[in-house]
Image 1 (cartoon, rainbow, N blue to C red):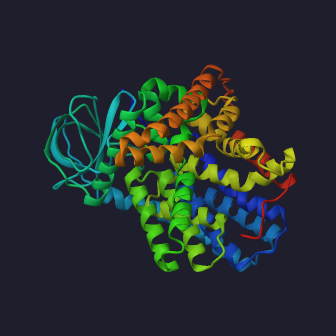
Image 2 (image 1 turned 135 degrees about the vertical axis):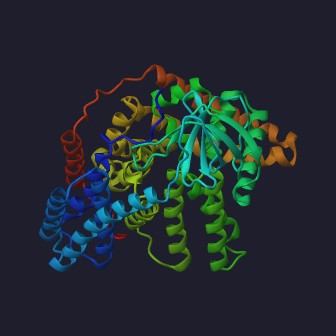
Image 3 (image 1 turned 60 degrees about the horizontal axis):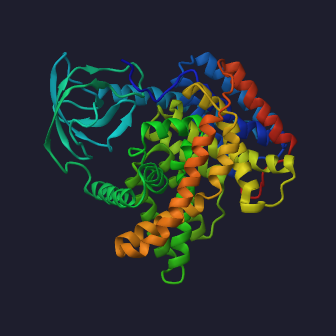
Length: 500
């Protein structure tokens, strides 16, 4: 019986090569080093050190890679040797941090032993679908310490965030430092409720109420997809629809937290800008973003988008210049400091590589096709986003999920055209349905048409999928691919440098 695993060691090398893109790219431009760049390079070096230790590199391998990268920085960016040495030490500090993190966690985990161990624990995350199982992330109660993932069959008992469970089963410890021990099909009994963080539990209840409203107004597949787009939940999506989304390359539409947070902050600014002082508006916006992330489950993609969005909001609220490059670097750094095993997590890689692809490849793609406007229905903008994100994550997708459809480039463009309208009318339908259901009738008709279109695109491209050969089986192939992207980026033009 296979445990659903979130990490892929053969793919995790991709994050190392993509971390080098900012270094190689900025170096090719022969730009003089600036003060803000030192912190950026140090953060990237620290994460490279964490990654190297995670992959089991020895001291000589790490030293050789760090010295080579440092020499390239000195040669191409005109950085002084003292800064290069500082960045070099940041890489070693990252490796030491990973080792300390793993040893600290190991010292503070105490798992129950035996084939029929009995213990108590509290569900610390929303239950999730994991293949044919329901996965419960459980925090162990005393005398034990740590967390386990419990896999149980759906439909037996209803479980919720904050439930305290009595568990009887065998705990299988994982050899991967980033994976929780697993318990398959144990005996379970809910012994208490509301043992989690009260605010998060309230937000989850609110989200479930919104989902129930959507389910009442639309057919099952339409309701499930709209719920995913609105609040990021995938639990109501059927296995058949989920498979079609994976084949067509459209699963990301339920995870677009960057778009959602941008819309939330823009809406709050438009409504409250003239009603609240700037500092109060800043505090309210950050609070709403934090609540949205808690309600959505605080996944990697949501946290990354929230941190970057918060940086942008703070910069706007304080009159500072926002740097997307620095924002993504320090968002990643903060998350890695909280969990040093994240760099080899596929979800982490997909989230950050998608943004890095947009940031570094957007201008070159527009220059390649001579696109100077968004086109009708902004199709050129959606095409650019599809190309840049898919090019950046291509090795990750193939090596993690086993396949990638070449028609995904087209399906991504078509499915994104009405996305903003879907999100807007979905929110309007939910609000009207709560205030006065008859008023929601017109909005439901519009949403229904939009969701039929989205489902048609998903179904069509799940049939018209063209699998790409698995060509990223070796580190050399991955390095060559990202090297080609660096050359392409340099040849077809740099992104705007005025906000770096």
